[in-house]
Image (cartoon, rainbow, N blue to C red; front, side, top):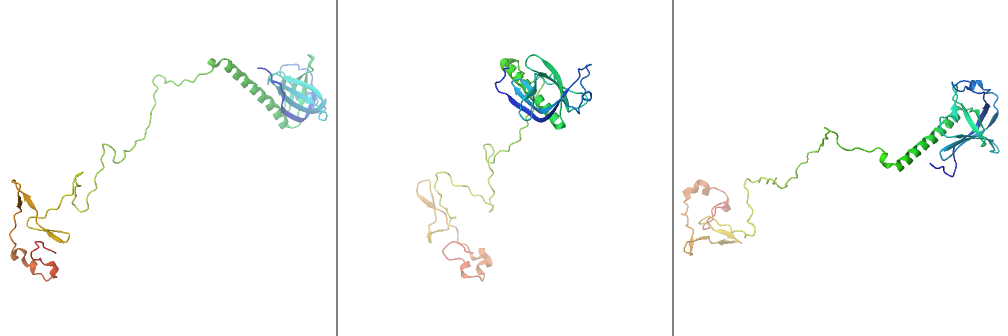
Length: 263
């Protein structure tokens, strides 16, 4: 990955101590207790910057900002930055002067939180570098990336749970039941397109239409001439019994000549 043209600042700590350290005799690591911690060689400001994949630890003067030393870091953890074995506030860095000369010096922070920020800033930067490298590889070789297999394995099944749905009332195949008549007698509707039939009174009786008495209906004969309905015999007073002799109002008695009994 090509380095970008600008330099970003990752971390700034206003107080850092620099120590001269003795050469490491064994591979067990550096120990800050072997340094003269009460007599630092230099005090100033620490600034961590990044340019592309590289990170730079810069030791600068607090007032003027003049560069005292610089340590390029290509990976972390690595030989460019190492932690001591007996403290979390001290580190060993490898500085370079740009002419090929290198030296190892010790740095330390008076506050443990500053040391933590220093460590995290370097970790985050190189985590980002690793992600960028992976993205670049996937862009160059898209077929080599992991593929998502959505096929069924042998013997694998799935189960679908569909809720039961009620049929709507009155749908096809399920006619709506007719409500029962409250009077005990159900009347059929007239046939479609037909005319309303005229009520025919019983034989021998008359139907009152518009305040007048209608003549009894006649039945057609086979020869085409109307034939009147047979007239019933007049009822005697014995048929009604004592009913006609009741002491009710005159309106409840039989009207002569009408053929209807009013109650």
